Image (cartoon, rainbow, N blue to C red; front, side, top):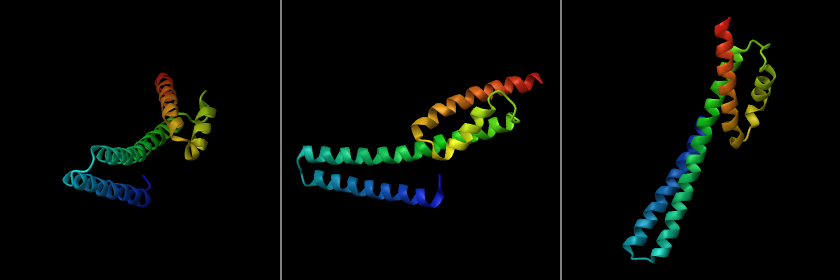
Length: 121
């Protein structure tokens, strides 16, 4: 996680959610319409989903970065997956989060193959 910028963003979202929850409590105390309370609860849910997405993206990117390092270290540049590894390494910084998950799976497969190959030698 890019420390300062992302931490500030997360804290901003949490502060916003805190305000939303206080607003919901006030609405309940004021005996407001349950439909209005529901709408505010859905807004809190959406805000939490944004935070979860940011955290999940960070976790997946870290996992993929670690996988890339492992397979690069295991493949001296002449293994059968060298081109794929180089491609993923170059695309990683601009890769969409949807793609990260599937690439992690591919890197796991490559890593397993490299471990077997390196154990034979």
